[in-house]
Amino acid sequence: MNKSELPFLSAGDLSRLIQSKEVSPVEATEAYLDRIDALDFKFNSYLTVMREQARSDARQAERDIANGNYLGPLHGVPVAVKDQFWSKGVRTTGGSRILADFVPDEDATVVANLRRAGAVILGKTNMTEFAITGFSHRYSTPRNPWDLNTYPGGSSSGSGAATAAYLCATSLGEDTGGSIRFPAAWCGLVGIRPSWGRVSRYGVMRGVWSMDTVGPISRTVEDAAITLGAIAGHDPQDPYSSTAPVPDYRQALGGDLKGMKVGVITEFMESDLVEPRVRQTVSDATAVLGELGATVEEVSIPLSMDAGVASAVLLAVEPALNQQDWIKENIQDYGHDVRILLLTGSLLPAQAYYKAQKLRDMLRRQVLEALQKYDVLVLPTAGKGAQPVEDDPPITSKETASRLPFLFTRIFNLASCPAMSLPCGFDERGLPVGLQIGARPEGEETIFKVAHAYEQATQWHTMRPPEA
Image 1 (cartoon, rainbow, N blue to C red):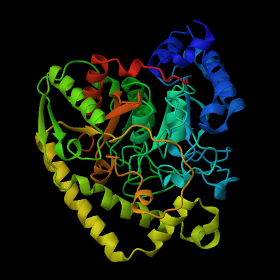
Image 2: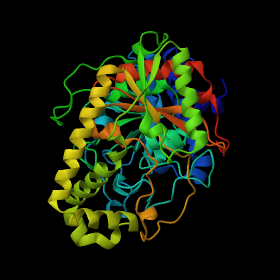
Image 3: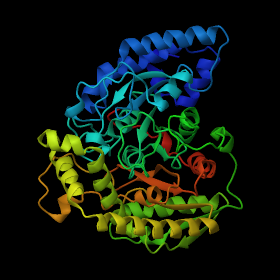
Image 4: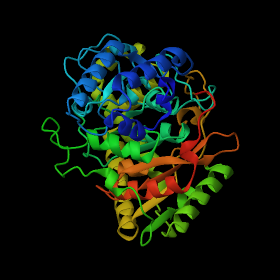
């Protein structure tokens, strides 16, 4: 195979070729570095490219595999990680100019886990400032490979853009309110937010302690399964990480959906925040699940549309608390959107935070009650496709103060449930639409089973962005 064709393989296919020694990790790494050098000026997906480190790691992977020390399906596979994760000896900005020169002296656990799995880390991807908003970038704004005039979605915007543009085989993002599933939806990718605690957060810049999660942004369901399997597991440095054994998520892939029950959340499907073409696309996707053997029914979760209210308070108050010292000393160094949000979070009374937590508890109970009856819940990831790039605007109206009312991911963060977005079609502009699948806590295998069955019955995951 020609080296230039390697980046267009799925991570799973590339892994099999590396394992069989038909492709060298060095060849694959050089192919990706060539594409980054040639194309990333269009996408701004990387903040730091670790060229020499990646080449050294690829040579080591090649030697290990040649000597029979194969470490698993990510061994020798080039990956990218969000700049929210510490990386030893490599600057880690969190997307902020405040940390432009910060160089950690240790790896985040997820980065260390990737290295233990033999992955070749190509670099650190762009993101919104401190992962607090969906749009505000302090460095060059990442662009969506499906349309360079649109956002790739945030806050893991660079991971979404790099994966969709074939500038890495798979990537890591972080999801507090939807920051994995959002770019996955807008970039036509597969992104899974694992159950809270399934993946260690040691060395991850904090947003909302009870909602932050790390997970994959990948091109296929199998790729996401491989990536999650490499980073999941208990970590003594994160006492809240799960002690449950990590399954081989690939074992959940395959077969039909006979006997499974799918609940379609009516509040989201009927919302006027969903564009007609998006609604029809997601409806068509749920019909495919029925054709694959699942029982598909409508289900009401009355408080579901209030998820944005509860999470908006948490996403303002907790980051403001985390950064209170920086806010006092460096408030003018933040981008406008982030500055306003942090100041708002600093001023919100305790009663507002308490009521948001009460609302969260009531919503969580409704979600878990529904998941007693259904194996998975489905809904659109977002009511709209990728939106036009614009400057970081002054927040002067209700519309600009809340630019993400059509993002329907937060229900699962508040309920501490796993959820995935995967491509299910296109809107009227030809931009990707995401189907969101959620399950009960520790239900990642169920999500992978349903998502893989749908993926294999459709062709959406094979579509290539025009700019890539």
